[in-house]
Length: 113
Length: 113
Image 1 (spheres, each protein chain N blue to C red):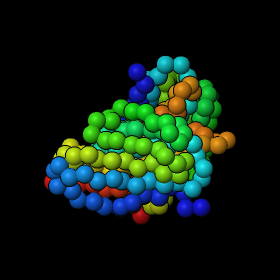
Image 2 (spheres, rainbow over the protein chains, first blue to last red):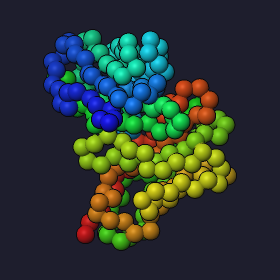
Image 3 (tube, each protein chain N blue to C red):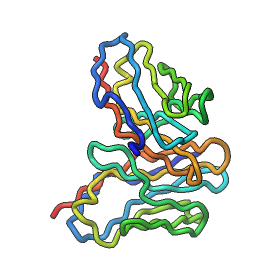
């Protein structure tokens, strides 16, 4: 099992550009989430999904879109990047018997100039 | 609302020293409590958990006890190693609804030989 994979590892964008952060898991987990990690603020939930076709907003959703067309994939889209979106982004999944344990991907470090 | 407060870091220790990282929480009801660890350049990994009052979570020599009366979940280890250098996050999760994790801001531990 690869677990949770994220691409790319690093990305630099100019203000106003768009891009998609990819996340995939091979554990057949129903729950998937996106977090951003900023210094001194811990991890904050952006969007989450409780199954294919179902998504909802977390605490900091503005400027981000998600969709969940398959169980495996949960991409995060930045429609018009802003410097405030400079952060490290983590995808996580959970499910099955030990649904409380979230498995995190290695992260994507995004810089918006 | 739900929140987690952790001691500020960095915590700097010599190898074999005793470690305590404080964590207190505010929550409605009785949440589940977690400690996650993030090694340099990696995503978060679940270190230990406790799901009800007086439960003690333990893993890799680390321990934490769910104290309802003091709303605390302090992380302890009797003898730290250089390889324990990482950022430690305390987190809580409601027992109802989607299992959103609420994270503290993280505490960096630096262990020197």
